Length: 155
Image (tube, rainbow, N blue to C red):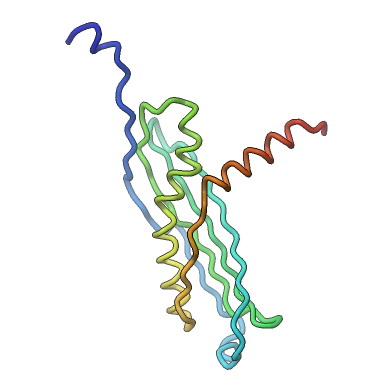
């Protein structure tokens, strides 16, 4: 091995180690009467992600999604999902790690979460729910702007 090879930084590594459902809850509090309603439910979705180091070079990202569906003033169903992913991320420049965890990992996890929610809603007796794609980059940038704005304001 030459001195030049020894001084070259190792290539960045990003691997998916595991994708899993950490927690899934489905509630249909107004069954069976809610199934007799003819109106389409109004949907509300809340989504966020959190990442943390598990050990050196291993990170967990949890994508939390809550879907609330109401018909008039009655809850048709409520789905809460925590879809997790374990990722091996090594040799990434420090400034690239946070965006990888906040954008890249949720982008990988989201299709699995969308499938789990659709299947859960179907098994609860409703038509499958197909979530629209989420722009995690825009969510990350919005969060960064909010944090910068909050840091600039006196308490």
